[in-house]
Length: 307
Ligand code: CP
Image 1 (cartoon, protein in one colour):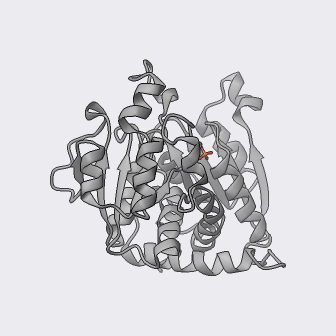
Image 2 (cartoon, helix red, strand yellow; image 1 turned 90 degrees about the vertical axis):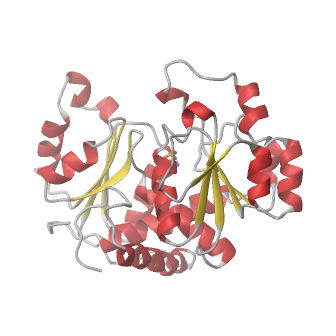
Image 3 (spheres, helix red, strand yellow; image 1 turned 60 degrees about the vertical axis):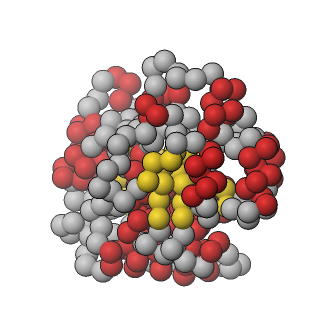
């Protein structure tokens, strides 16, 4: 893989980049499931997590990944920083770059902020989710989880269900899965599924169409009420129309399909409680694989080079 400074989108990666990062994630998982969980690959390097939006999984797993690679990790919390006094993103980055950071992992509610930061500094910038735009590390962990469960991504059929329009996960995960040879379909509220002509992605009308399509993976998106001023549906109506209800779960179990979700799960909205206990529910595998995928991403980026 050619030296690459930043990871902003899956679209910006070559097929070789995608395959290399995914292959290395397998080796990284072998490292951290052993009794000695650390390797000195990033010893002496500084990693900063800069999350302007809340996160449980992405931030903590990037921090664990950086620790496992022996980097020094600093957590920057905007809500307790000079950001609340009005400091701009540019000035915050200048201040933090004076501390000679090598990697900056950034999440922001506005699409495009990680790319702006990447142009502004020598550190490797990793997009940990920007608005409705992209979430590339989620895409890697999703692809890794499907590959681990099925042996390969190529040829698998994955239906992504929910609010596609506002979802950075749908954008990045559908892109990586298609690049790796999977077939992807979308299903969701009609006003929240954009037209997908010429993309190779099928739009399915409802659950009957989903089951008729015979997916290997049912991937539920989180209902993102924080991005929607007026929620479109009461939770119970959403669950009835688009969620994995107990009745749908029985069919999913009978047909051995896998269930995935990026988290956090709204129980009783996207997934019924029983779906979380289903043996082919891969939500915890996704979290575990997030560490390996993020170790691999950190390992393959080169601060101070041009992407
Ligand atoms: N999947 C995901 O991005 O989760 P967090 O918001 O908890 O990081």
